[in-house]
Image (tube, rainbow, N blue to C red):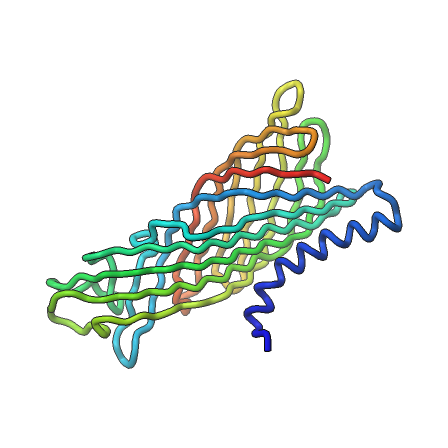
Length: 274
């Protein structure tokens, strides 16, 4: 039987398919006038920051790891956007998946049960972080003219993270340590309502160059999440190319084993209009 987790991971793909099929069906009934949609593929190359508290066996203390101290490589990623519009109303889908991994040998940049490693002890760590981020929102056009466009957004963002840690300790020292070797996994899903603005401001007489901008803020199962993205793009007849800087931040509630998260880095994308 398909698990609930597998079902919701398929939800972004289903929503994108429905969003794409819906306009096509409407076109056959009402003609092509009014319907616009855009598909974008992009590469986002963020540095990752955050902390995770990994449980260990029995009464042993947790292992607290700062993600940015270990992660060094991107194993796999997928990023895409689908936007559908009819008149002032629209639907926006943004889907991001990444698999990040890294190793750190002889490190003391972790804590045990909230305390530093005992003197004379260090650790070898292997950390893998799988992340799904899906933003889906309705949009309403506040402005659309020769100077640019701006949409209000209202929707939700889903974050799913699975963090896996393998560790081994070297040396001896006072204090309580978890088992000298082991592994643990922390997996959690967060749903948050968001509101925001996105759009383009055109520059130059030909209105080919533009400044894309995006900002949102939200809360729900996380304590606070916010995102900002801005850069420079060039408009062609078939679509556009964009280079920007994207920052996404999460603060989580006190009972979460994932205590905070940030993704921060350059983005390059290409968009096609239909």
